[in-house]
Length: 275
Image (tube, rainbow, N blue to C red):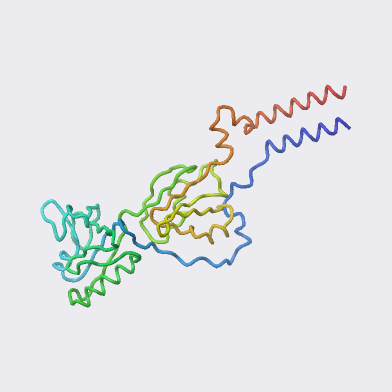
């Protein structure tokens, strides 16, 4: 009886020590939720201190020069880099070469656009800004056939914790998801918690925290934080193994060798007891 009991205990220790974790693979319920309705895409909306490039293309080159803030060493068009409204960026457009000057959204949510003056852009998507400026130019009979392009300059998120390349990641397109951010950060390390990824966000002046389970595709796709916003912070929490490794000897029971040694010890004890 004692022999059987010790055998069971030995095999149990071996199984526990060698069992594979179940919370590593992403999207484990993907097969069960086929056909699930997706969220509406959520393009980014501009906030104070965001920077954007606005490029106006039209048939008249003189008008292009008038509405596009291009600077170079020999000539500067409308706007100067000394103004807080404009920031130099390494972008060219509008049929001109040089450095594109980015518009900064001020504390009131406005930009100062050439000829049009103050334009309220806070809460607008870049497509809405493009359509609005185009309509204003046409309404004032300034340009008949404008093509207005709006590009992000300084929008970004931060990805921290158990990822391979933590840091600041620029957002260059709309509908940027947490999966995009994780991919740009080099994916989670093996020591990152897949079931509890945190997204911290400021909403109407208050801090909000969302917890996302990457092992569940349903939980991921239904989360309010699936689409990220500028200035979001994504934090991948270290798992228990990583926390124990932070201690001097805390990781001893995560080594397969210790479980093999324990099993060997128990087998020896069992053999001695049954003699």
